Length: 65
Image 1: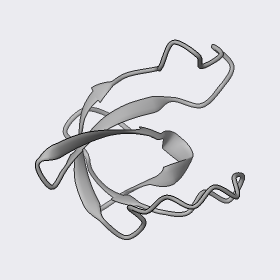
Image 2: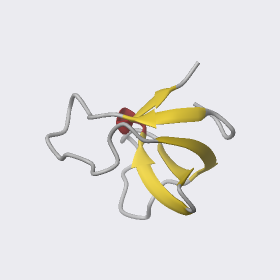
Image 3: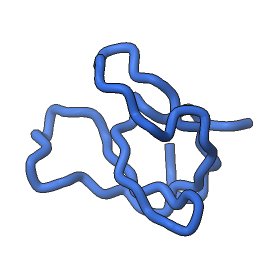
């Protein structure tokens, strides 16, 4: 994924944590790994949705075609 991609928030297949944003649509505005993330972890992105920016790991995002 890259900046400018339209994405849908989905439930991660590898994580049991349920995001309250599942099903919502947003736009990736920045690649933004948080300071606590290991280099071996998946990519993290800032996603603009409904007038706010939220941080998501790539396994919670699905590119909308």
